[in-house]
Length: 192
Image 1 (cartoon, rainbow, N blue to C red):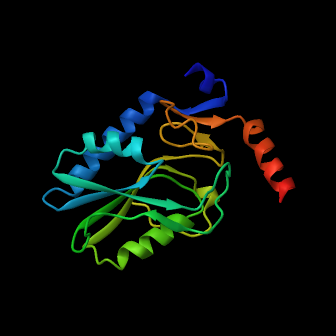
Image 2 (cartoon, rainbow, N blue to C red):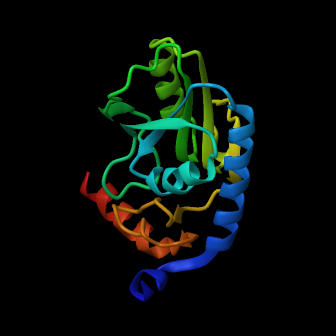
């Protein structure tokens, strides 16, 4: 872990802060969905650690399923704006109370696409729970119902969030040292 931690400029959200806030979100969701048919839809891959802790904090019966949506590619730190479904749900969501579980909301493009897609499947309700929210980067307004943390416009990794598929296993959310990703993006830009 020390090898990965040396690449972190600063820790933005500690393991303890994550645990405390997720417990609060779980309690709130449990209250608001009590007596309802709840289905959590986790957005892979980044949302998996958040989902793992959130489902244990929710104290009412619920199910979960997964979708993989892509708007990034390779070593990019900025969304391409082109969104596609990489893996779809196995569950029929018609007349279900669906709660999308997302790791981070940035520009809003990916989530807007996902919401539009899921609404065509006629859920009873459709809400959003995100661990991290970057309101300063929003290009499309998205109705977010549950927010773990609002964060500044910095490139973050850890607790499921990655850079080029690395750093997901860090137990905190940290800001990646800028020189680690600007060098790669400059090389990609000069090659194209």
